[in-house]
Image (cartoon, rainbow, N blue to C red; front, top):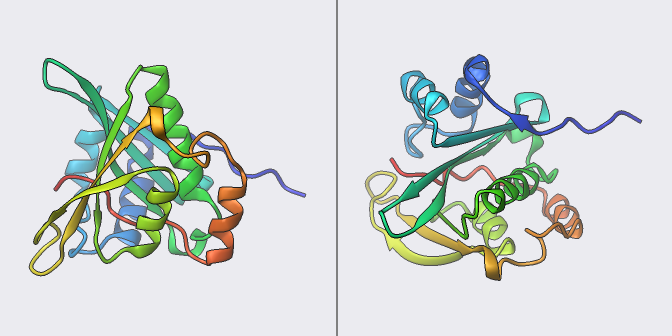
Length: 182
């Protein structure tokens, strides 16, 4: 039996792989990042990138603040189509939430395409609440949904309930939702 590929921090050397998965998972409707944008995000000291499944799953969080409070934004979560439904979205979310806790960030914000029901189910399972609709966020007639998660109220799946990954596998499709600002 082979070991499951690990999740690790991504860096500038991973740019080509991240560009590739970005193109595989997000078309022009979902606003795929350009190579230049990804290079800048990888160099951003407020960004935390994770790469899993030998580069076929990737997530990016950013820390943000307004002078009174600090929070995280799940900026992007992408799982290659051939790996969806295998729990990679949940594994990346759990790792990102652990990163948030280590930095005393108690709120996570994100956006998701309103039509991406598998991603919406994944985020709901982790306790994200849909708190607003964003008309035309991903393009004409393609709405987004604003999400928020308060870590103090997150659900058991985010805290490490391994049955969540098994439920995702049975559904047959994992997350591929763009959950970021344009």
